[in-house]
Length: 358
Image (cartoon, rainbow, N blue to C red; front, side, top):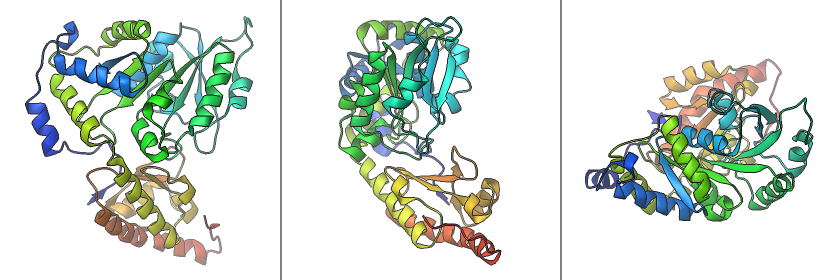
């Protein structure tokens, strides 16, 4: 079975397991775990911020970041398919009492003009005051698309002009950095807060960080406790994070190459894949254009021993490459996917409803 459902499925490598086993630990809640402290210092520098806080998940990191920059009744702006809106169970409303304003895009990336038009007028007593803009890089809902640094800077400048805070959901920020050649710190310095997930492309079993100024991270540590994120001998997990930063960042290029190989193979077979979207480790397959629902396509693929998952948009599937699949696995996945889905394409062609090629 070739499992391409997510890059969260990876198993710890032998080297990572050794690092976990050898980790020096202490009471993280009391700030006595040396491995956690070392990871936080490493991450702050990596993300271009003064301080970082180690957390169980990036979802918690996003929600803490929003809480540090807002008060109940404020408004947050993000793209409509952003993780912070779509996959965090209404967290901005639940944890921070925020109104959520979504910006529609075709691939997850918006511009300064959209931000300017979305901001509620200052002093309007009938609308929630807009206080923070959230970007996601790479953008999950957009199929792993990378924000160009210049676009980030334009949006950041517009937000600053209106005295808005900025948060970067950088769950897959290292994918963006490797793909674009822009350092994570160059991205991170444009924001008040940044999150980084360790359990996606970096291959850790769990863990994330939120980073920002010292004052803001002092608030973040309070919310970490409030949200139930305080841990004890967490150095065993932080050790995995340090190992990943040492060994698993540059190899993300392999995941990107595998995704390109997969996308090109599927496109050459006539399947509806937009190769312009394949910038990192995501490949989107629009099975709706083959006359299939996502559920039907998943069942067909499973029968061919290929696992894909649902993407953010209806009847689109995603394949996500990761460190536990190889270039050879891509060839197997291409063959299985073509067998599973070309029959559906033929049925559509015979019906006279031929999808426009990508």
